[in-house]
Length: 123
Image (cartoon, rainbow, N blue to C red; front, top):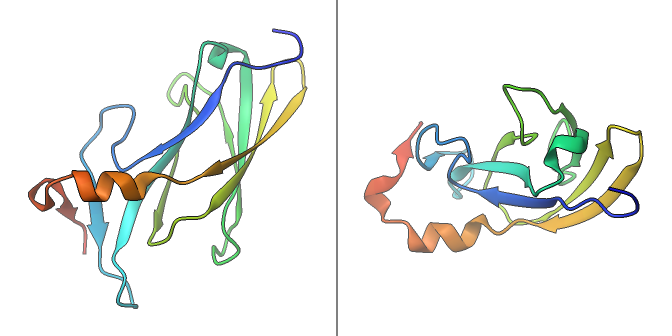
């Protein structure tokens, strides 16, 4: 595990830990808000200490640091959003080395593939 960390950033309407299905709620605008799960995957995940996610400037709290724990082994961050944007991710390994990545959210592809009846309305 020297040099490169074999970990990727993913996002989904579906919780990677299997808890619940896709959800949405009404917002103050015409756009519905979707519950989106951002998380890490990869064979080097056991070597990760934390992931710091930098969200879109429209978020009140743009920077979220998630410590990898037994109860959150993939540094899962759940947000409510209506838009697709680029997320900056700083992954820190257990030796303290930081890997900076960019991830373009892709959950929009799941919206069109998921039947409306599968969505839970959280409004």
